[in-house]
Amino acid sequence: MNAAPDDTHPYTLARLQQLLGLSRHAIGELMALGLVTPLRPGGRAYRFSFRDLVVLRAAQELRNAQVPVRQLLRSLRRLRERLPPEAPLQGLRITAVGDRVTVRDGTAQWEAESGQALLDFTVGGTAAAVQFMPHAAAATDAADAQADALEARFAAAEALEGRDPAAAEAGYRAVIAQDPGHVNAYLNLGYMLCEAGRCDEAATLYDAALAHVQGDALLHYNRAVALDALGRRQDALASYQACLQLAPDLADAHQNAALLYAEAGEKKLAIRHFSAYRRLTARGGS
Image 1 (cartoon, rainbow, N blue to C red):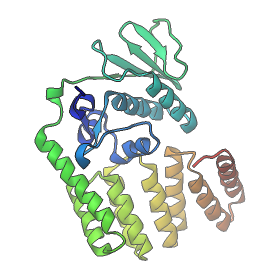
Image 2: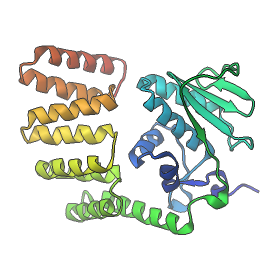
Image 3: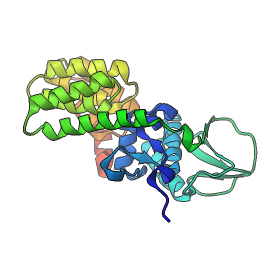
Image 4: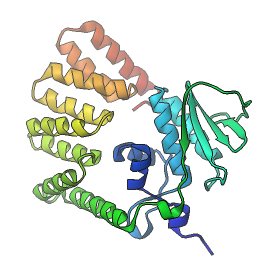
């Protein structure tokens, strides 16, 4: 008899956010890359597995250690390949040591990217245990229902964008009112506002988002686009720089910053960002 999804994928999105402190957008980015592969039984809320939890925790640690994006993604792919399908009874510990991820599984310790066994030395670095909680301690049915309703409202707003923008806007604002940290609602609504020529409202919206959500590069990027459209060039440049501090491989941010620096007569900075843009696009960066 096959195991139920709730047994193999016990973590809800709300529970992962509670455990790890990650935004929906951060989790969504790893889902889009295929590094996190939740189920969605019956079209309801996403359910995440043990592997998903560990990969998300490792991504958080590597990002905090400022590991380059390409190396981070490579490490996460190798880590996922080597993880057991279910939580080991003895527990598992993920540790970021410099730009490497090490995994302790009981008495064994190994490097995530290479799979090489490591000697059991005590090392410095940011250690973060993945705590496994019994299924009974997962989010309650009420919390699951609330998360389902919120995501259904968000999906409904997305579906309305093309045929009823006013209703879509109302839907996104309702999602934000219920969850002020819902990054994708801010991003979608802000894009709609700018497309409608309401970039001043979009910039205000992104300011509100950044008061609730820290460390999301796309919020800074979209804010910069809105500010540029309003003619606020210096503010836009500051937002592009904030974006690039979080996501230095975001090629479009380098390109837009380069254009603004060129307009401002800052030739050295323009050349620096144009060079970064060409380098990233040549190697397939995004």
